[in-house]
Image (cartoon, rainbow, N blue to C red):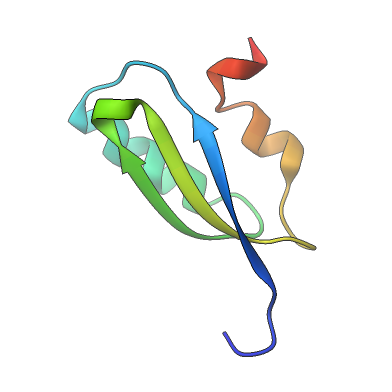
Length: 68
């Protein structure tokens, strides 16, 4: 990914189990601009690496419990 600027972004998901975490990982990877996802089940958080200029912020907000 040479020449592409990326940044780290946490998404707070709330309580979830391993199966839901795997599904969310795939859903988050499908969002425009997301290049990597790590879901930490114990913390209820997903850490994303995104291409800042391409990321669909509104789509990501739909995953966050902080948006409720």
